[in-house]
Each structure stands twice: as C-alpha cells, then as structure tokens.
Length: 338
Ligand code: MEV
Image 1 (tube, protein in one colour):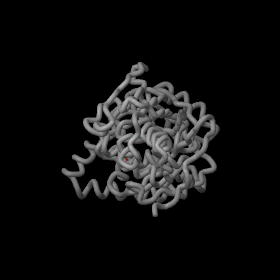
Image 2 (cartoon, rainbow, N blue to C red):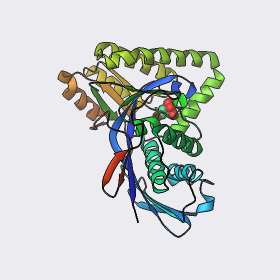
Image 3 (spheres, helix red, strand yellow):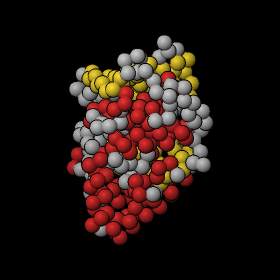
Image 4 (cartoon, rainbow, N blue to C red):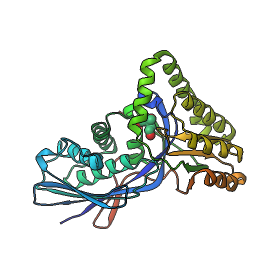
C-alpha cells in the first residue's frame, strides 16, 4: 500500500498582521521549519492521528470516520479539520492513519498552518484528489477557520506557495515577491501564546474604538504597500523605517509585551535598521533587519534577551513524496486569485 508524505513550512509575518484579518494586505515569508504528515489508508473505518505534543510525547487520537470534524479535540484540531475538508470532497476511504511530525515548540512560526496544509495535501493525494494550489488553499483555509474560528489565511498561503508573498485577506490576492535577499534575524521571546486570544483582543478593541482602529489598520496597510517595493528593491533603510512604524502601530493595538519589546529595542540598539514583532504578538517572535556588519552584534543582543532562531527564509512551499518521488502541487507559482 502506498504511503504518502507531505511537508509544509512555517512562516514569518513581515508586515500587516492583525490588519490582514480585516481586509488589508500583508507580506509574509516562509521559514525552514517543516511539518510533515504521512497518510496510509487502512480498513478499520476510523481516523487515527498520531502527533507529538508540546512535551515531545507522541499522542494518539482515534475517531469513527463518520464523526470526523465534530467536537475537534484541542491537540489534533487542525489535522482533523484538514481531514474533514478532504473527506467532504473525496470518495470515503475505509480508514485513515495520519502521522504528523515536526518541531514541537513552534515559536509561533506557523506550525498549525503547516500541519493543516501537510495533512490536507497528503490526504488529498492518498484519496486521489488532484488539487491545484488554489484548491488546496481554499480547503486548508476552511479547515483553519473550523479549528481556530478566525484568521486571514496568510499562513496557509505561505505554507502552500512558499517564498515571500503579498497576501490579501482570505486569498483575495496571493502574489509572489521576488526578494533577492531577506536579511532578517529572528528572535524568540520565550513565551508561546495563543493566536486566537490576541486576534479576539484586537477584535474587542475594534468594537470599543471602531473609528480609531480602522484608521490604524488603514495606516498599517499604507506602510505594507510601501514596504513591498522597499523589500523587492532592497532599500533597507526605508524598509527599516517602515518596520519600526508598523511596530509602533502594533503597540497601539496592545499586542506587544515587555519581553518582546526588550528584544526589539535591544536589536535596534545593536544596529538593526528596523525591528518588529511578527504574528499575533503577546509573545512568540520578533525579527530585526540587519546589515552584514551588524549581524553578530544583533544576534548577541537577541540572545541576551531571548533566543536567536537560525532558520532559512523564503523556502519552498508544500511538497508531496510518494514512494521516494517528491513533487509539488500543480500551479506552484503564486498568482492573484482568480
Ligand atoms: C497571526 O500570526 C497573524 C494575525 O494577523 C492573524 C491572521 O492573519 O490570521 C494576527
């Protein structure tokens, strides 16, 4: 029996987080932190998911096939939701065994989206669904909404298309950005937080202060548009200013924390041209824009206040391996959504 494995990368949000949940654009790049999903067809009429938990222990979860997608269990919610989306479109299998693997401590760099994409891609292939990247995006994004309730889908797009992309809410636009260099250093604050909690917090603030928050989102959107050309043209000083301005607006949304702020200020003091948090905030990661001469000093500053994370950026998106043969899903190049 064939075993299908798919692997998908994590992401680093560069600009536009939070605003992208409300119809504005963001810029995201992938990080070489891959999650894999291996799918085997079985005959036990059950879905079995085995996955490492945050304490590095393998946990196993089982459900009858006809109950998949109901009452998602916390630790396997994204994988199960991905299977449910595929089963809604494929001929019902006689049973499915799904093993996921990858970094158990994800630093908020997108392991939930990577697991969703890897499981969806591997299951689709195992069940004979030949999905384009766009179709895979729509299915995996629906799975994230089922598991998490809210989200723009930018992390799903990054895990599928790879590289660096311009993204608009729910995949209205998914466009590749040609970035000859991505001179960013990532710092981890030491605290892993729930994206949902901070997305909900911003939603509540927006309800209390609709006019002001909308203006902040519009301003984040303007900075993100400006940053697109600064990044692709390698205008680092201009990009650094835009990152710092974006950080100021994120502070006004209340998503920064003292450990993240310490990392951001330390990186700037060590010579970074700009530094900001990445993602939902509340903890997790930041990144700094560094010129070669300042790299060592910025890395040391990050390590003094947190942890420098050494990962390649702009790596390829989802890949499927069938019996040792690896290939990409069709229409691999990102493009505007049709
Ligand atoms: C979280 O990594 C980024 C947010 O913009 C949420 C989302 O876009 O789904 C806060």
